[in-house]
Amino acid sequence: MNLLLDTRVLIWWLADDPRLGIVCRERIGDPATRVFVSAASAWEIAIKYKIGRLSLPGPPEDWFEGEQARNGFEGLPAGIADSLAAGALPIHHRDPFDRMLIVQARQNGLALVTSDRAMEHYDVTLMAADA
Image 1 (cartoon, helix red, strand yellow):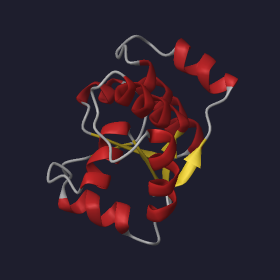
Image 2 (cartoon, helix red, strand yellow):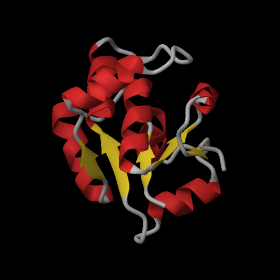
Image 3 (tube, helix red, strand yellow):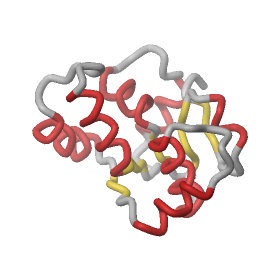
Image 4 (spheres, one colour):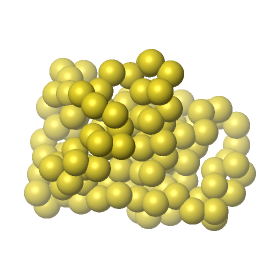
């Protein structure tokens, strides 16, 4: 199964954060697994950096693509159809970035790696970040 990392999981992976479970780490690091990061995560990281809620070794525009390439993660663009589908989801979760990730995981047949329990209310394959 191929994976889509939610923003928090992506940050944990890059920071080697112990909150990311061993099974999850093995799966993300397995060369046979295709790992995707969404344009929505790049957007969320840029916003959090700008408002001072996220520290990075440099500006996101200098840092993000290099980390993505270094880890072999594939970018997943977000289009108009994705945006409309995210807006049409039931309001179990109000975070627009997470709603986009749900749609992208569903539409691309990916397991969404997350620690966010609110995602369980949607018809999407999940992988627990702490597994």
